[in-house]
Image (cartoon, rainbow, N blue to C red; front, side):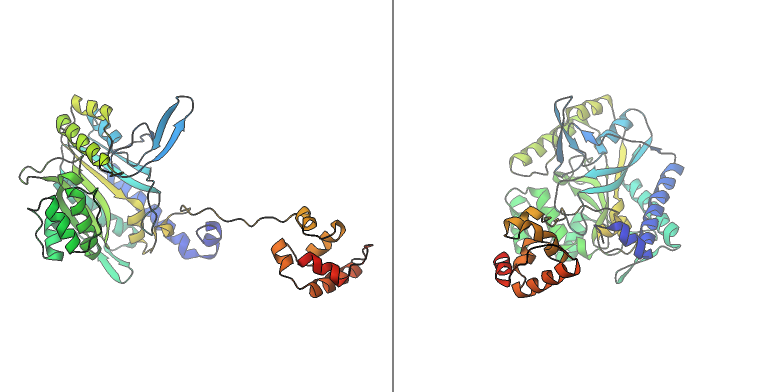
Length: 408
């Protein structure tokens, strides 16, 4: 049904309804942000450096410029440049691309909306997210309650809020807030969380949270105050050492949005990028690269800014009660279709069938050499002899033994 979506849409009215709801979702968000006075913009999809997220990129080459380019993994750094340029608030509904694994929650090409607003912080952004997603639910369903599988999810404000450390302690009974990297590694092993040697402190905490907490958060919940190692673009928390002003919204066991109080100190940002380079040297292929032009933009001065990214596809899954991301994408990425090899007349001749008898053999329903070899010679002899008579063909007769040689 995914490969031939046109047929799926013809025969399944409920599928058409799913995509109508997805469009309502996007229109609801676009109207909400536009009515707030924020400017919708477009930024490059082909980028000389990939950044704004921890992910592997798709790589291509521009022949005229003779340079390597990447399909964007996020549009964050370009939108921040526009805040530097003097806009109070900008947003973009963006196609992003990540060269990573596929699952019912992941497609290599996906849609997200990113928003950046000057002179705001992550606490303010949490309030805006609650307000916007509540409105989306009302616009689509006429209620804040949405049926998702066996769960009824209520998007009515206010949503629950945990710090990341509080969530881990709540679900595991272990306080990791004062642990160093080795203690975190031992704790992860104790909790049977899969880890590897390339993971630093932040990645270990993220793996513990993802394995033990995320899937248990069904109702909309904000997880706040992430370790600095996990968030190289977020501002340091003013009172909690080693943490940053960041939140993710989790719903039905999966992240639906990610937001920061954005880092606007170019010296601190350079240091964070350099720390990411060290992680890359340790084997972390999702570590960010150093973007000198973005650092130069920060040196011109970016005001305190709140930034947000919401995954449209995952939110659409929830709002339409869909089990897979493929259900909310018209044409999801799929493995190449295996096409059957077309058998030619020459192939039959090579198998021993006389040239003049090939059309008769094919008329008998034999369309491939494999099919020919699997057919009983007595049955095939009977069928082609009958066809010769029926079609009044002037062909020399063949014996059962001759046909046996074709199929052997």
